[in-house]
Length: 206
Length: 206
DNA sequence: GTCTATACAAAGATAGAC
DNA sequence: GTCTATCTTTGTATAGAC
Image 1 (cartoon, each protein chain N blue to C red):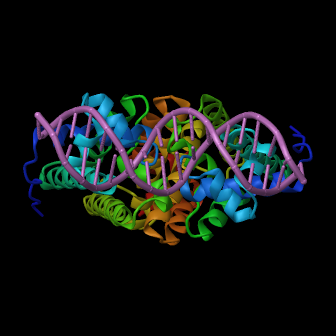
Image 2 (image 1 turned 180 degrees about the vertical axis):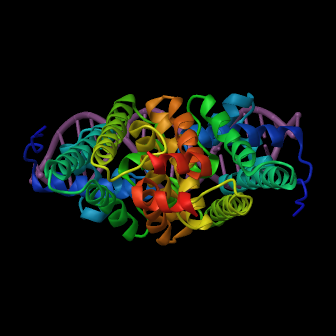
Image 3 (image 1 turned 30 degrees about the horizontal axis):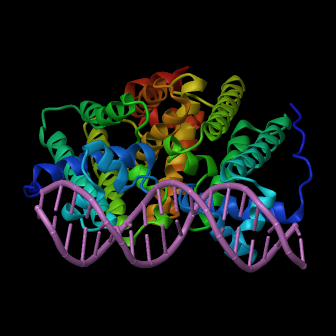
């Protein structure tokens, strides 16, 4: 599946999206305001309304861009048939490690999911799409790994994918509060070990 | 460890805590207001300030009660040495399933963790304590299971505990957005299968 | 303990000048 | 495209009557 890049936007609009995304990822959707963006960009609140008429509209644009970028990245990872399935999992986990590096961010969709009920329904649909997209992708990679003899799973690929995705999202959440970056590394290590055919065969013998 | 129950509070104060907790779990901390509570309780905003002078104070009281209740529950589960370690895990997972039943709640601390940066520092400390408490408890149960020959782990008990806790928190987050209750059931099933000595031994042979 | 009344700040949003 | 000015609503919080 080839997805088109979102159409060009003015530079200011793009900067607004950048700041809004960073704010949502670190403070949450309800807690960020046009004023925060105005301060960061050194313009007035009213100017932001020129680019994005309402906060909901801005929120949707942020998610759409985020989901689109991720979708393309996932396509790219899976495209190279030469790669081992474990390498694909590593590439998938990389952005989580990257987010975790910046002290207090979580996944954009994880942040929004946390206050879903207080939010416009349009946002919910987009986050839902993101979650399903990732879980489906992971299930496909896991199934591929099993078929190639790389992985041994304790349950169906779909269920293990659900567990893995939740574990990564949850790890970001916990990591932010405790401030301990090893949370992410540990979780990824365990997830990898648990699907690795070799490790499990050895563990079973012990 | 025996923990004392929190000291008695007026009935109204207790109702305020109930409503505040439900609101935080479903809408998030930033998005709930004294007005919401006043409406639900059919009193005026000002009356709530009599019981809890500030929103921060109310928030702390909600968390303290929540963490205290969980702490006592964990102690109780681990206290009965007759129980298998797998039973203990089942008992641990039960409240997550319960939360997931009510449509749109997540763990109170998960909800607060999602908007941590926008919140007073006192709240952060309490959520941090909650996360560490749970991960420590899980690690102890896992170690017990290994010692008794019930469990086979792919990594150290501490690391597997981190993964499990994150997976449960993340599952609640995802479940709320997708509205699909099987998310929780699937994740718990996989987590159990992955530590079960029997299942893994069989998987390794396949 | 609960009420009315009010203060004060911040939010999202719009109108219209430049 | 950005500004000033303004509107409206909502938020947390306090004072003081009952």
